[in-house]
Amino acid sequence: MNPYILAILLFGLGLGTTITFASSHWLLAWMGLEMNTLAIIPLMTQHHHPRAVEATTKYFLTQATAAATLLFASVTNAWLTGQWEIQQITHPLPSTMITLALALKIGLAPLHAWLPEVLQGLDLTTGLILSTWQKLAPFALILQLQPSSSTLLIILGLTSTLIGGWGGLNQTQLRKILAYSSIAHLGWMILVLQFSPSITLLTLLTYFIMTFSTFLVFKLNESTNINTLATSWAKAPALTALMPLILLSLGGLPPLTGFMPKWLILQELTKQGLAPTATLAALSALLSLHFYLRLSYAMTLTISPNNLTGSTPWRLPSTQLTYPLATSTAMTICLLPLTPAISALLTS
Amino acid sequence: MSLPRITHLPSGRLLSTILHHQPLLPSIIPLTVPKRAVIQGLEGIKKHFTLLKKEFTDRWVGPEGKPIVEHMLEQNRVVWEFRGPESLREWTVSSDREIGGHSEAYLKLGRNNNTCFLYGTLSSTPPRDGETRYSGYCTMRSKQPLASFDRKKHHDWSSFNTLQLRVRGDGRPWMINVSAETYFSHQKDDIYCYFLYTRGGPYWQDVKIPFSKFFLTHRGRVQDDQHPVWLDKVNTIGFTLGDKADGPFQLEIDFIGVCKDYAHTEEFAYEAYKRNPEV
Image 1 (cartoon, rainbow over the protein chains, first blue to last red):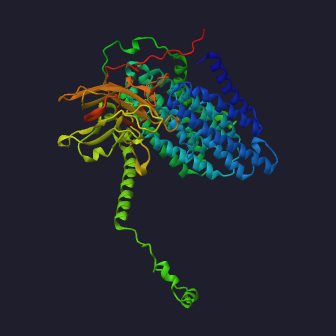
Image 2 (image 1 turned 135 degrees about the vertical axis):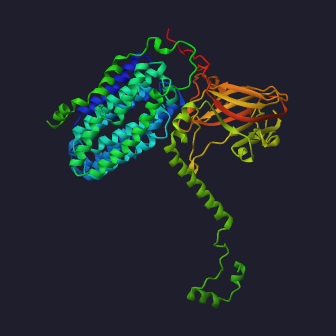
Image 3 (image 1 turned 90 degrees about the vertical axis):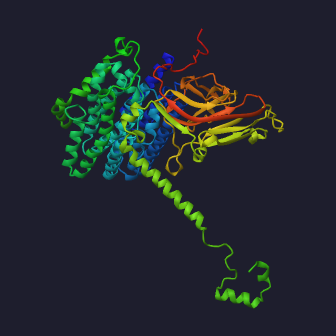
């Protein structure tokens, strides 16, 4: 893509999220969300491929629907209560509609059906932007909401964790697996939103770090399905050895970073008297863990059939920058001991 | 009682029917559904629920119903194998007869019910409708695979890179058309094609065509903006004959499969030249 156009689009992405962060008026927040949607559309269609066009169409339609619902709900709230403040949604009808609109924006179940297909149609870099950056602006609004219906959030959260785990079981395409992983993680974030928004933010940031590492590993190996991933031992042996740790961190196993948000969420849910919800969420995390383990098995614990006659790729220098991957991998694996510091930060 | 007979009823009886609410006409349409339709309906429900249950239980075994080890080790997969009459039901045959032409195409099982036999006559006489200038094609296309409740399913051939067939043709050049999912991209007639040159003669021919060789066409015209076929959502495969040679044709197919050729590393056979280069 022309570097000037790429710069404008990336600037638009950044500006949209910043506008939403900085807004206290619903219209401005909506505008930031729309800018984000429109800026990423050309990035998604830069490869003229029918699957990319399909992904872009689906993304645009769902995001436009969500934005329209959001605008309608905020206008309804302004009509009913006379004010446009983001934190002052008190009427239950607009509050519920806004929650559902933002759920559609980020891909929470049961409004998740677009996410696997959209991610599947994109290249890994754009998929990474979609999974991480595009979630920031809606979450900025979600964190400021005063939810009127706690049941809705619990239902959204539990459905997402279950569907995220269940849906990923049948996949061999890596991008779809990451989409279902995203749905499951979003479910965990929403479960604890009404009790402790700071833990939601922590889960979001931890998820970003882990997903960033995963996407970069897939990009380095140029793999988009499990069979190609299985040949990564010849491309980057050290990374192949480290990848199970990254995947288990995504799965939320101690002593890796991914355990931290899950631990804090389960603790908070139990404190609030929602032990059955916590149990169900923890059990559904097992489903996700199954497909992360499957990826680890395919990548690291087996050597796939191959026909290597030439020089193995790891002998040649990599064209991709490894510094971001190294940093994010270190953060994905090693940050659990910082839990006391982070808890203190959260409660202060 | 038919309508004309009612008009001959004495008016007194008509009035009494209104007062006593007796039906004038016996019901003409029988109110019972034929038993055969009920049985077919029940069998259909049973079939769809069985497919749905299979979809639920398959994912506990592994992705696409196979253990992960089997998925990783799979190097060849036979997708269509013509071993009985039910295999022909997965295919649709058509020719330019649909637009008013004179070609004929038929599909039957070959000898010993071991192969499929596509035969007919090609005629390139254009239909006389005043607008069609060229004609003369016959095609055999696989039907879209369906999941439970007739939902669309796709072939996922992303683990493979070569199409392998065993055919016995008649020396004519056929075209193989692979069609991917195009519902959302609004490019319904986008088809990826490559040629199948048959040898004719009594000997079978094993044909291996890498998917990197397939080029993109739209309604038969080769497109400028080419890209390799994505194999994760393949809908149908088809064989078309349109070589402008009038006369009889036949094509016998033993099986159609996909395989992973580790030695084939080409991603796409056609270079994409930069159009509108900056000066």
